[in-house]
Image 1 (cartoon, rainbow, N blue to C red):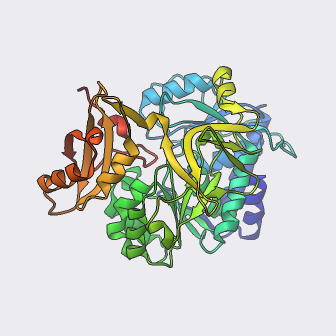
Image 2 (cartoon, one colour; image 1 turned 60 degrees about the vertical axis):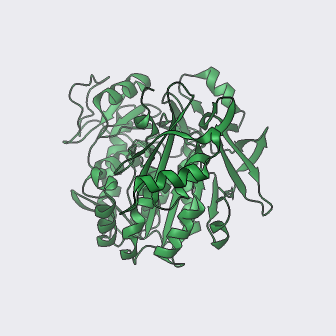
Image 3 (cartoon, rainbow, N blue to C red; image 1 turned 60 degrees about the horizontal axis):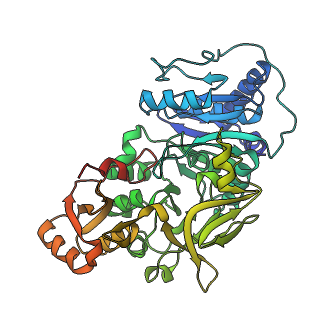
Amino acid sequence: MITERFHTVASGRPGAVALRTPAGDTTYGELSARARTLARRLAGRGLTGARIAIAASDHASIVTALLAILEAGGIVVPLDPHAAPERWAAQVAKVRPAAFVVDAGSPIDGIELASGRLASAGPEADPPRTLDPDAPCSIYFTSGSTGAPRAILGRLSGIDHHIGWEVELLGRATCARGAIIHAPSYDAYLPDVLVPLCAGGVACAPAARELVLDPAALCAWLAEESITLLHCTPSLFRTLLPAARALPALRAVLLAGEIVRPADVIAARDVLGAGVRLFNLYGPTEATLVKLHHEITEADTTRPVPIGVPMPGVTVELVDGQIAISSPYGAHGYLDEPALTAEKWRGPQYLTGDYGAWNSDGTLAFHGRRDRQVKIFGARVDLDEVEALLCACDGIVEAAVVPADDHVALLGYVVLAPQTAISDVRRAVVARLTPAMRLARLTPLPALPRTSSGKIDRRALEVPS
């Protein structure tokens, strides 16, 4: 399992740096010893199989807790140290953790804890010698971008399956220095930290969470740390490209969470050159990390970029056009929501709610979500398609489209290139869009709002009509 992978690597390079965080460097030997000590304390408190929330603020504490909880056979519940207190409270109420792992900087004042802070000292016991690969091991919440956030009960083998696959796919040299871009409350945090650690590399965290939202500062940090592996959303990647020529160490970029467009591929090839490998990854949180992948090639500059082919051990089918994923590594379902779980899971098969079609080369094309389609005066309009058309207009760097509250009009928001006039853009937009796609309003913004995972936060753009 995944903790064995890490400890095996750590035993061979105890003095090498494993984590580089704002609080300082942590070696493999230090991280391994701390994780094993905490695992014994968790086991000593009878917390094997229990839900344990990570409410720490420093990445070294978070990663130590993550490894320890998995080794002790507990269920990891990572909380975002930068989230609003009400979000913490809602997640804690939903999950009801048996204990919390915290550090000195944990911002938990005002939140009622179910069973208090887990003391740094206490009784110890040996963790389980073997762990059931099908055992529940994590609870992550969906982003809520397609409805209320839901708690998903992950499977232990799913983490190990993904990490082993990614290290093998990319090679240890590419995984040598990985960037921790995602907040710990998102499942993408797992490969951010575990891929470098299981490849004998260094997982690097920026000095401030806000750095991720400042493209120039983030690029400067990526260059300073000689980052070789970057995993982010396409919309965040677009903002990095103007300064990305200064990243000579970069070897691979993994794009996930949003649609990758041909224009992204053209821009990336122009800036990064052919020496940087680009991948489009697909995997809902319910599927436990990535389940399809596609290495982007020159052919993807002239066609919709596929989400690719299933990774080993995964089967993908289309059920009435809907992407259905079958895998022994998927999640167990939604926490305390048996009816919804039964609706979305048919045995090991998960119905994603996304639509696709097979290309002639065997790759899967992504055709959007039903909930990203609206009817405007009787005509069905795909909001992703409207955004793609906007982004194809000269002078538009990024675009987001949301329906007005009455769903009889569309609202567009764009980030413009320097020295671009909104009047020129409006004329270009009118020429490209069909009558049903026409925008009631096109608003220029200095930047689009983002969630803590780096996705465009369309909910923040929705305003009453």
